[in-house]
Length: 582
Image (cartoon, rainbow, N blue to C red):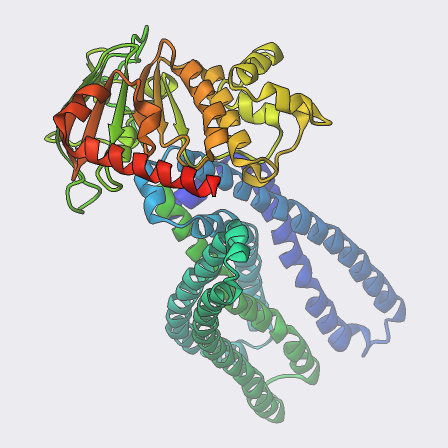
């Protein structure tokens, strides 16, 4: 992990070197004040060298101005190194997230991921900047001050230095406790972020059900967990700092007693004793700096560990000999496909299915039967194991094809439409970012959304809000269909695309979908069976198995599950019509 962290310094080696040189100069210049103080007390003042006193003071002032400029350089450019490293880590993390499989996002909440991208990496950036500087400046000051104090009185210096091992062992003990406590605090902070992200995203549902108290209670639970974790963390931190501060305070007591005895025994002059008292802070302050730095170090290390955890997740990868899918016709075949998510029970069992190019196959059946899983397996969102059968496109096992080429040739329209923050144009262009304005308009016309867009003040440049909140359900669905028209795939997946719409809107959407399906191999998951009567073939999926197959007429004649489902929906439709008439 340490080598991985250091690798982010490589693009900034030149600036880091200058930063470290500036930090080193700050340390060296800091040694001049006690040296000049010693000479004033022992030479200049006793010998009444007044002009030399003034010159020495002016010289120190000039050096302090130089040190101010060096500190500005270190603060500004040092922080910029940290920011650029943070930016690179953030880009690496985001790019890695984009390449992770669906299963990762099934198991990790969005709020927790956002915490790692934002606050965790901020702590890493602070460590990247302050870490080298604090270590270099403090270490240099400790060494130089120790040497200088020895020149004043080696015995008194050794007595002070003898306390350092005690300080080291005490801080090491409490630092371990603090590290564990702050790791827990970070986890609880991620819980809060996840709760906030979920609640804000679902605020309209909360208001619709007036479940403010439920969300407040849920947030309060996460907040209480954070407070409790913080209590443990700050308790450990308080023990760490109070113990370390107590030991450094002992330094002053030792100087007072030992120095007084040395002065009484004529083992040290009054000038040297005064200089020693002034100079000992050159030793104690960097020790305190390193102690205080431990909290930042722990936060930075914890943040980088969490960053590394995601970076170590295996991304989606093509097979070693994968080839691109080209000149797609759209023949699809499921051969003895079985599948289970992680170690859960089997969702699909021995599915055998073939869809000829340009044909439409509809999957029907109760929820949880495995229909959507089949739709997720076809674009290789979830990978089949070696013994789980195979899925073929134009005779090629999708495991032997590159992921991008497979997905580029498959268009998906789902019930839950996801639109990005931005304009109508930008969301349609998501289907093919290099499309022209004319192609965007043509796709919108074919999706029956163009006329509506032209009634808007800003037309295609209209902002649609987060997840398209400014659009109706039918408008969002037609926008997603326009996106697929622009993509122009050979294979189409319609996963309950109209089930959440009212009857009038469904008719308009169905017209757009019928247009979209022309000339494409289509896999339809349907809740409303009336919408798939014209499918070339219908398969009933129950408990992960295909129990019936045929056309609408064949399945109705078979008097099986499909007929029962269709008849039930037909009766429900009649009831709705009667209720409307009343």
